[in-house]
Length: 256
Image 1 (cartoon, rainbow, N blue to C red):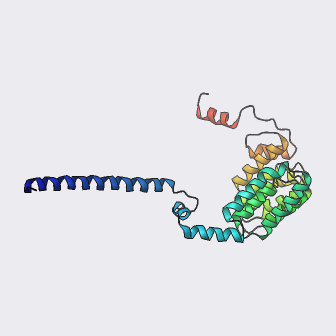
Image 2: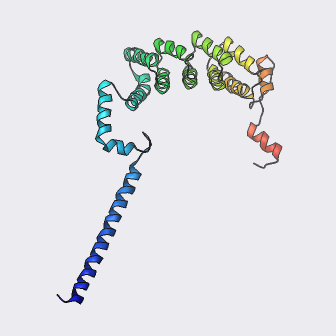
Image 3: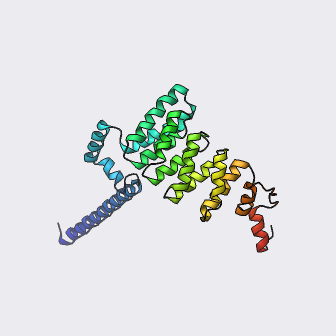
């Protein structure tokens, strides 16, 4: 083969090699971006890799043999929460006991909170007993969930627990949840506690007390604490004809 023709062939082969290299590079980058796009936040940035890697699959299988994995247990608890209110009384009794046991025995605050939320949907007495215990849970979020779950149960025991939490809990968010839930208890004890809350130094407590009283009485003084105090003290107070937003607009000279 002549030398020039040989060089031409070499140049053609080089061109083919470069094109193949470029195609391979494009293919690899495509795979990379598809992989990155498939990565979720369920278990950190390596979740998709863990699903593909046999070691992690085997570890998950071992966890499943020992019992349901964490995410599965939370999903099961969610399903119980969504269905327990429509169950028959016998089923409610059975599931209330099961969920109460989960709350009592599980070390995960998230699962205890999930259990509390499920128990809040059950009218069974066992559910309320567990919710009363949950009001003393060491985790703030669990106690908040318990206070919210006790709303509307209207039993003397639940009302007393909410009153206690509203006055003594060290976490302000827990106290606020208890105060708001007391608005669903139309009892003299609840009214007395909410009237006392109106005298608190904390504006947040005062505000939640007005929200609870609005729920309890059906009256609305637009969050005016002084008006609520007079009303709760037996004075004949007229409700404002304008909403709070309208009063603010008027004071700022904003046309509606």
